[in-house]
Length: 261
Image (tube, rainbow, N blue to C red; front, side, top):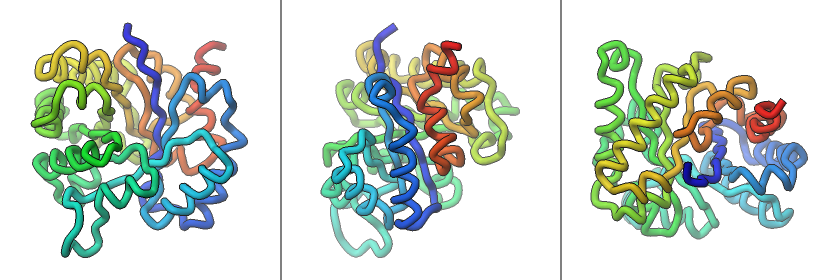
């Protein structure tokens, strides 16, 4: 199996003001060791109002976390009240940007075409997209999960080169498992992540498929992270609620220690 360094990402969603953000990052720095950083990449995705604060503490204290963002707009600038461009984020040394999270799609009406434009803007500004995909409970029960996810991947990656696709991250998050306490079984998660990789393989070739990192997201917690991360096509986790507490997020980052016991 290709050597894909796992990426554990913490999506803070609309939580934590900049004072709370500073406290969490400092607490997390005590949870994570040098050994962890050698084998796992870690990205933190705070709200926009926290990004500058988090950037400052990461750089001042030389903390080994990648700065991430939850969203951006695809245009470089203009009359788009309330939006933030990819270029603005890149100037804050953001490394990873979520694109097409289910909450952006479901709550804010982002289409596959909008997500694709965002992915291209992120890459244009020398950051890495985390392209999110996932099905609803109704789609799963109607046996439409695979076609829904494959369609989101094809649309989201449209117009990209195999090299670009291989450099980025895809995140499979079953919508019915986000924030509900329900988690896909490790077998179900592996099956769907394999669909993502096969879709990349069919559209962009073996090198891109073997290189792209695929995260699982949806009620990831310290107790289920080791089994999820043991699956061959799962290369990381996109963590929601459990990343808002340093101890629980630290234990997810250290999933391999539990796995080895």
